[in-house]
Image (cartoon, rainbow, N blue to C red):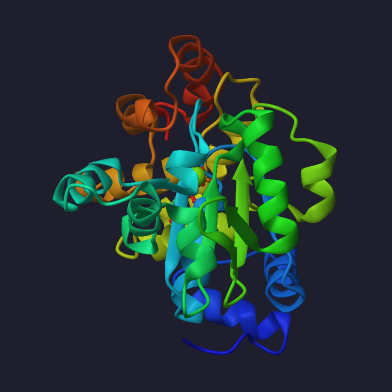
Length: 294
Ligand SMILES: Nc1ncnc2c1ncn2[C@@H]1O[C@H](COP(=O)(O)OP(=O)(O)O)[C@@H](O)[C@H]1O
Ligand SMILES: [Mg+2]
């Protein structure tokens, strides 16, 4: 495990070494979060590097990543802890007949019978971890309320066992694709980072990082085309993930230019709605020009 960097620039350099190219505000907010011990809420469209930021932080700080993937209906038993009923039952059966309830109870509500889920694991870890609570907007408000307690006190109370306080302070990232408004109470406790589509310069850098063998001219044209496509009013604009996929596909196909033909054949990699495909073919495909016209 390495120490938290002394400056935001140092943290940015660490992220780059870990294969993540952060914008200025990303580096600054991550730095403040690590230093102040505050959780960060990272919001933005899908595929702009929210999840990857947490992974890269864990790599660059050499801390274990503990990930809680949220989904509709996620409850405490899957997020915090639950009792291992089967093991408890086996123990009860193994107890000598005539053992009093008190003795049995003392036995079966010990740590040995606890199944710890990501939030408890992060709290109980001996070494500080990076805790990623991914896609929090998929859960409901009750779950958010439960999280609030954890995020403000860094402790969990288990009725049968008592209070478990954090031994070490995790760096906490919550991500949201913005599908619902999160509560003010949650936002108050967090630093806020809005991640958007990157500038063409940074996206070029990211694409080159993930597909280093793609000719520079093709990569440059790719990010320009992607930027044009994002300007259209689409159901689902292409994200960085799609830019990277497209770059890898073009590399595999040995494309040395993005001509109209190449674009038509591969655009389904970056646009994935029937109506979007039509819009993009009309507005961008035509602009690239036919091979004969070049
Ligand atoms: N700043 C960045 N530097 C390097 N790779 C990035 C960056 N932003 C996004 N990526 C890449 O884009 C892809 C999508 O990122 P991801 O974190 O899964 O998006 P999100 O969680 O926002 O939906 C990943 O493969 C990731 O490696
Ligand atoms: Mg994600």
